[in-house]
Amino acid sequence: MYRVGVIVPTLNAGELWPAWLEAVSQQTYPIYRKLVVDSSSKDQTVSQAREQSFEVIVIPPQEFNHGGTRQLAAMHLDDCELLVFLTQDALLAS
Image (cartoon, rainbow, N blue to C red; front, side):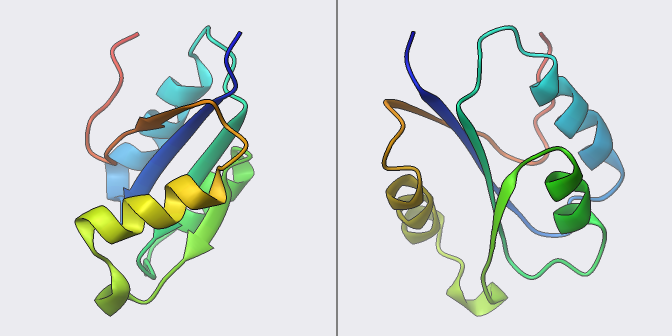
């Protein structure tokens, strides 16, 4: 089995976030590490992610960059063999 890392950049993920976290937790393939890179959310995004055992990196919103933020996350999960990049507003179906 591969060591899979899941990465999601977030900013005030809102009402869908608890369902998103639950959908990730229901996956049958083992997830080795889960990472949120948060742009200083003002809601419960970070605390809810931590409650679901996500690692969290908080960055200032002005430092967010679509490619650069994902590269930061990939370097943080350098012990993973496969990285899965998701978005906070795409709920996994199964």
